[in-house]
Image 1: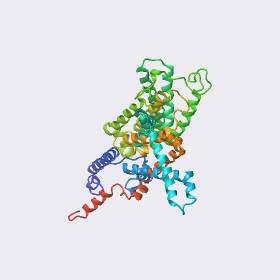
Image 2: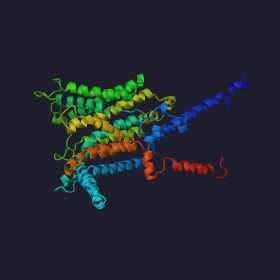
Image 3: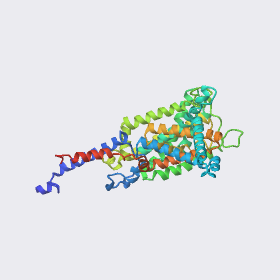
Length: 454
């Protein structure tokens, strides 16, 4: 064999070139995976390999739009509150009356607008965080406990959606996973009669298994057939809703002597104990949500499984080249994500509602997507976002009853938050925030232009 045959076209030995390429590929994988769970913000939504373009430096437009830092998230919330306040003022009757003579007395118009917006948000704060007009301290902090109660299923389901995002999957099936988890948990709760402690533990396990089963279906179909997880999870949501409606009409689930689609009352041994006493609705399910957040933070940042999941989400092709099974990763992440959503169902049937109904999941599964986006798909960010949205839900009722402001304005504010989060360049341009990496790029250019630079 001639020397030319032993060498590659660029003059390097073929064996050495292959080794160098393998080492470079492994380094790219390690950098991408560490970036997804380290100091750099991870992708908030999955990015498929087909969306990557070389001219963008390996990042798709979708990836750049939805990737941001905590400051952008905070500013997005503030902008949503400002726009929401403007909408409150525009729809207020007193503001409309003052607008009729705006050019004669403009001060009345602005005073009425400020009064309408500030009054609504003060009522929202009093209903969600602290009621400084209450007679006792327990009544003052009661709104905060309501917020944490509502936030519990949002946190658990949001963690499931966020975990799937980190692995490159768009899990929008949390609604169905909550329903199936709640169904199995409720069945164990009212049909089994066990001692205190054991009964609740089995209810939690049953709910997690139910959610994992429903999420695992999507993971297996994605891994084995390539079915798109968005389509599969949407269909599974509808199946879960209709399945629960059917079960609630059967003798095994329907309350005896009732024609309504409602289950028997869950045994007291299967319920979460009150966290602060019988005067509050807050239960130990919130502690379960904290434990779930700690576990997911450890899983993503301290475990081998989490490293592999982040690697699959960062670059599936590079992960496969490094010997990581993407199929196994998809199944694993959907099982865990489904189990987390199932825990949200457990918190509902064993903590808040204490029965199973077709509306036990409310809209928690869909709100969990927003929570995960606002939390930037990080465990503690999702935890904080869940509490924020819990405050919106808990305080919206007080806002409507105290000021007459429609509770729908809360949904508008939540939607605006999603809108601004999905457009971080807009937020940065309004507040004149430099894009990520601007200082690093500037520093690199300065170094490259320094005397003696190659």
